[in-house]
Length: 511
Image 1 (cartoon, rainbow, N blue to C red):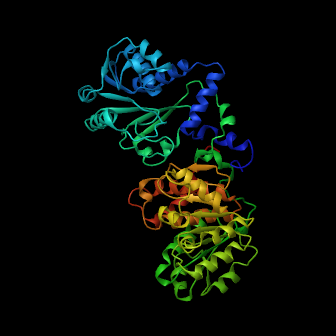
Image 2: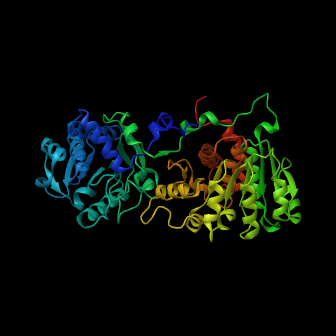
Image 3: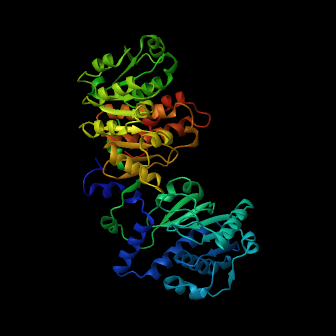
């Protein structure tokens, strides 16, 4: 599996790795130690920003560059100089005094031959393009005072029709967590360097960043081996070799056998969605266990589903004892309480991979340690798929105060011993070793009832085929996003199940 084992992470995830601000600082320092000056890196960064602007705007465009007192501002000075040389009408505004600039930023300022103006609303509002070079990804304190005013004016200019380009990350966004530190620039585009930062993908930073362009400024990928980042964007490069494909020599058991547990007669929809998704994802057989009164509703959903009556945990234990069983999905509308807890215990006692969702997680909120002990003690894979409410209930305080979604998911996976899929528009997939993936292909239309049940079923269907827990989780989340894009605006969860066919027919990579 490309996500596991020394050396393999970087071979597959290298272009998709995410660098925290401190890790990006290390990448800069290591590059400088090897002979590339900081001034050269700054020149390359400023040139990349200018290239992006010139590619999209004609000569004579009014560009206002708003610079801060640090290296981000230095990048802005370089961009301003290059843009002026290329025929743009450039105004450069500095937040602070030139006398306070140091290092490479001071060198860049001296190379600027134009006027340096104080930051003003008038200058910002008069621009066609505003370049935000106030703060970079390393900002870790709330924005206030004159900087907050400047950000407010930049956002007002954008609402007035100006295009806003952020240098590295919109000012006011925490590059580690994606959080807004008081107020943040709302950019149309962000030009970042070498690798993206977590704040480019985690909400709300992802919204503020707009479209992100990654520029090569002369940092060699070899530095990643020493830094060893522990997060990446969820990309097909990491799991495409495991994409579900049928073999002409195969049979139904080649796709594995999955069981989905169903709740009472008034709560069958969730299990039906999960079971249908597991089938569409490639599981060879899918059995739905349900109380007697719910069986007709389940049987009428898809003729391909196998149904088995299950009125109590003991009967469930009998059904999941089948050695041919390769995956179990528990939780969607199953009910919260002791019966569900017992079913979870029985499922985790088998050799099958297990997906725990919704009620299967909430049933352990008063004693999460008991669940984690069961998960850690089993050789088969376990994937837990909480949304934010379920996550808070089960993984109380995971990651500590001020933790990012990455930090929280990582802590949850480490304490539980399972793969954690912390759901949302910026879903994070975390493994027990601390390596995390952030998903970015999910459309807003997925925010609908039953969507999470479909995701649990997709992951269960992939697990049934023998795909490893982390790969199945990562691939399943990505497939779920693709299905949402196929189904399109106005989708309901039922549409996602059918859309999986189109997703499998058109893999997101070149064969």
